[in-house]
Length: 538
Image 1 (cartoon, one colour):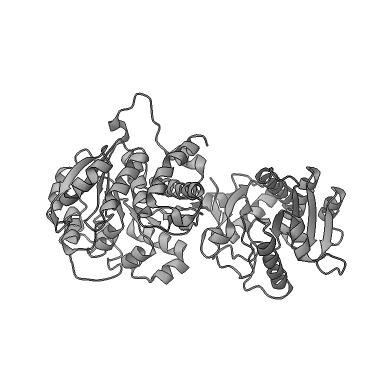
Image 2 (cartoon, one colour):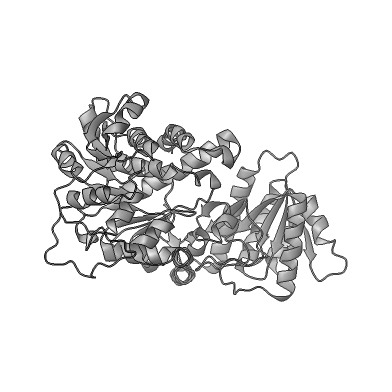
């Protein structure tokens, strides 16, 4: 499972490896060879394979030269465009010896950059690395501007070497000259800035190349962040033995819905089933039952008292009495924000509600002595349930923990008192701070969903797609997570595995339908079985 590191952590790993005898030159050779292997695999279908490398003066320029030499040896037509002279560089000589061409930006005999880009179906961006300082200025800014215009005109496949040139690998800030990559081949670990906006949409798909760093380097032990992959998700999913029965896979109870948001319960309930729960019980306001029962015949039902179609306060006792077999509980999708539903949630947590409007996280930093936790199954709180939590004093210490909280930035703003802009500008820091402070797992949704655990572990899902920017996709995610929790998966693992499955289902739905505007939440749900099939083969 790829690690997620800061720039300083990456430098420390390289220093430690060099001190062990795995030299920087050996790292570069491994990086370039790995890069060439990925490029050759990804573009094997090209009739006339060719690559132009934009080669900066730093280490990722060296990685690019090594890769070009390897590709030339495999029959590719390759060219290197040097942004700076590299006199007597053996890597340059190696490209030439393999049959490649080398051009110097400052040489008057060098063809125009646009013409070179037009000649090659693949462009390797090896201009700038992880130590970039923004904003870009001078000749490099002008060169990348010309390259970007040529890419927009001629449409080569852009492969970023380690990181797209012009991205701050700690903050995610991006220069306007960045070449949006179809694929970023990053070395040894994913860099933090690559999973944060505005950089994330510019990175494309991420492939990690092993550069030979020993697994027992001291810095590896200190890294608590990672990027899930299919193999990691496969390891988390519970086994499904042939002699299992429905009780083997647990019971997920989904308390959701109101007359204005009827579909939320259905989406979450089916997602819980599709993620493997043995039994799903939908706890919904009574008037919703007739509309929903035929749509999910596999579900069982708890019909909750309502007031004008929303869950009523007295429903807390009804739900509590019917949780005996539940192994996980989801509350919140489609609730609405009526006072009676707020009181329902407060009673469910064993407290008297405060229905006065207020915003922000007002609880004390330490658990109050009088805080008691109700006897509830493992809990997932989503959507309006999160906004209603903010009305309850000391709510973090009323939840059985660790609960999984799944806010989008707007809901996170209600819980924390921060603005959406503040949250989006420091997504990683916000998710980690409040997971630690609240003692619960925080799933901060959005482009590059972040999953933070109270103990400091953090997972990042490097997927940004408008296919998931549609009403109901959050209900699907919450249902997947509660389905995994019902099967006994740890809270943090259920959260990041569920977020990964959800993101991949969004990408599959997009690939099937062809346009992000056409993707509905139900399409994401329908794609989940194919994702699970892929995971099983990982």
